[in-house]
Structures are given as structure tokens and as C-alpha cells.
Amino acid sequence: MTSTRGEFALLDETWASVTPPAARRMLIAAAAAFSVRGYHATTTRDIAAQAGMSPAAVYIHYRSKEELLFQISRVGHTTSLSVLTRVPDGPPTTRLAAAVRAFASWHAEFHTTARVVQYELSALTPEHLAEVAELRRRIEAAVRDMVEAGVRAGEFDVPDVRGAVLAVLSLCIDVARWFKPDRGRTPEEIGDLYADLVLRMVGASAP
Amino acid sequence: MTSTRGEFALLDETWASVTPPAARRMLIAAAAAFSVRGYHATTTRDIAAQAGMSPAAVYIHYRSKEELLFQISRVGHTTSLSVLTRVPDGPPTTRLAAAVRAFASWHAEFHTTARVVQYELSALTPEHLAEVAELRRRIEAAVRDMVEAGVRAGEFDVPDVRGAVLAVLSLCIDVARWFKPDRGRTPEEIGDLYADLVLRMVGASAP
Image (cartoon, rainbow over all chains, first blue to last red):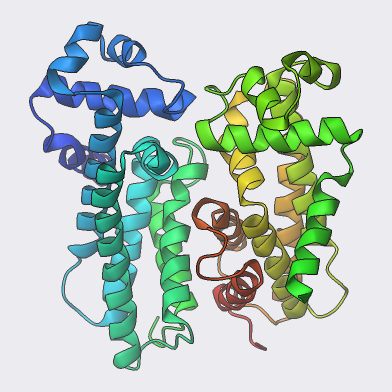
């Protein structure tokens, strides 16, 4: 039951920033449609149908199909950055484990959104891509800071910090590709597994 | 220079099984086209144009666009399975490191093909998907065998073998998403980095 409540809280939080509700409903419909047929093969008409609205209604809230993709990408990156960075203070080992647990779980829970966010970057306009790239740099920096703190504190043993950070992020992001709800592990179990594997990757001395 | 020769050898090997050369050229063109706009938004006309052939020529070699996707997927999975399994005999630590090095490098080298193979599975017919799923089970079994051999030999310490195997494969496959040629690490360097990280994940005692 705790798990279910947690999921709804995360769901609310991920899309809550999108208002009014009609715009939010359209964004969720667009993410679902893009994930099934890809961005280029999806029309605004498909998205409107999925949201149960008229095609014209799309343009009340979004200038274009690309604007929908950008908003999905912006919300997705902002939420995953916040999930990663709001871990409580504590020793680097505890913080990195908590961050990885939350980040990996988020990619399981929001696999549909995360897939669109990760695989359709090349469809963004240069201006929108630049904005998303800045969020991606902040996500990378957050993990790098945690790994470097662990090395400085003597808790981690990492010969190649940039390489390890790349692998940690990659591992968590790829959850969105293979995760299937109601089959195998829950998002929380994936978070626990990955926290343990990442501590091993950074050679954490206090497991 | 060794690296470049290695890459060409691998390139030859990946597509060599596809004959005649016109069919091979078309498959390579299809993989490139699918990777840019996605399977659903790509037409056989686009593929023919990319291959420098007439649209009718596609149907001499392939029954449909889905048949092209299936052949790309079949070749991609078969080659990556062979890359993974032909590591020389030796202690489990050495074998797993060699397998991961080769599998991760392959996903960097063939990132275009690998992306199509991984992200468009849902566009395959049920019959074709079943065939590809069998190759995916063999890939998973190959890695599981190596990890279990290491546990039995007392070289690895793995609390959750299935979870570790899932993560090892996921880590290598996701290289196809983020890899960019001529920027940052070479496929060989990624292979070396990942071999080290995976040995840490399985708690290899003899690095």
C-alpha cells in the first residue's frame, strides 16, 4: 500500500506543474502516443483523439507538436533532476545509494515518459534542445558531485570518475527501455538492486 | 590503426551474411533511415532513396518494411550474441571481462543498428518477435552462465544473479543510446571501462 501511495504522489508531482488540467491531459496523451509510434509518425490529430479532445484544442495550449515534445522533455528532466537531488544530507555512501534508488525507480515508474524524453531528443528545435541539455548537465553534475564527495571522504575507490558517472546514469536511464509494469520487479525493487550495484561500481567501503 | 582495422572487420562481419550486395545495401540504408525518423515514419520510398535504388527494387529483396526491420533485428541480435559468446576459455573473471568488453564495444560501433534493434521491437510481427525473443534469451543465458560460473568458482560474490545479469546487459545495450563517434571515448575505451565496472558489480575478487 505504501508503494501505491508513493507512486501516485510521484505521478502527481511529475505532471502537477502543467496547468490547466486540459493542457496536462494533452501532454500525458502526447507522451503515450509518441511512445507507441514515435514522434515523427504521430500527428496532433492522434494526440487530440487520445486525449478525447478536438484537434483544434491542441493549439489552444501548444503552438506545435514539437512544443508538446519539449514540454514532456522539460517536465521529465526537471522531475528526474529533483528526484535525484533532494536526498537527505548524510555520508556520501548513503546519499549516492538514496539518489540512485530514487532515480532508477523514477525511470521504471515513468518509463513511457522517460522513453520519449530520451529517444526523441533529436526532434527538438536547437533552442529547446539547448534548454534540455542544460538540465542534463545538471543531472550529470549532481551525480558527479556525490561520487567526488565519496572519493574525497575515502568511502569510494573510483579510478575514472567521469566514466563511472556516465555508467551510473546510463544504467538508471535504460530502465525505461526494458521495464514492464506488473512483470518481474517493482520500481522500488529495481531501485534497491541498483543502489547496491552502484555502490559496488564505486567501490564503496561501507555497504 | 589496430582499432580501425578491428572496426572494419566487425563491420564486414555484421553485414556479410546478407547477400546479394544490393540486399545488404538496402538493409544498411533502412537501419540508417529508421534510426533518424523511427520505423513508423519511414517509408520504403525513403529507404530506396537512401540506398540509391528505385522503390520497386526494395520488393525484389524484401516483402515489406517490416521484413527489413526483422532482418536488421535478426542480424543485430545474431552478431551481438556471437561477439558475446566467442570469448576464449579461461577463468570466469577473464571470460566475463572479455565478453563485456566485446559486447559494449559492439554497441558503440553499431549504435545506429543497435538503436533500431532495441527501440523498434514492438513493430515486429508476433512471429518475428518470437524469433528475436529467442535470440535475446540466448544472449541473457550466455551472460548468466558466465556469472554463475564465477560464483561457483568462488571468484564472484553476487547476491542476486538475475538482477546483476539484467544490469550488465542493460548497461552495455544503453551504450547505443548515448554513444557519439569522434567525441569522447572510443568503442575500445568504453569496452575497457565497462569490463572493469562489471567486475566490480559482480564483486570479482581477482581484478
